[in-house]
Length: 82
Image (cartoon, rainbow, N blue to C red; front, side):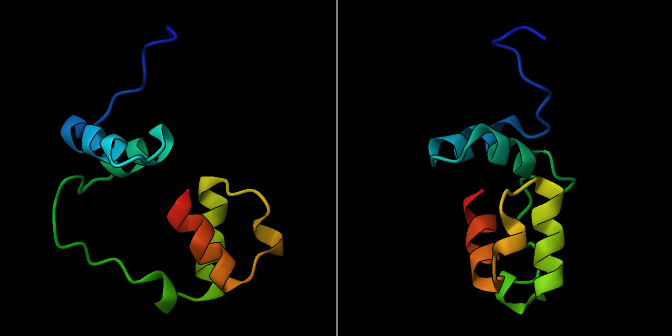
């Protein structure tokens, strides 16, 4: 893949808006490539309402370093800032 090429983005408009808000390329692409990208009214459970194990699993899936030493609050912060 060429340097200035990137993988396909399902919702280019949302991707650009997220980048304009200061999100990393990785995080913006991950959000813009979700099956319901661009739809409002998400039904996701708030991080604070999830168990430690659920947060840890999500952190593992997206590759957050140092997660094994984090408590629930630190996992929430890391997930929000990734």
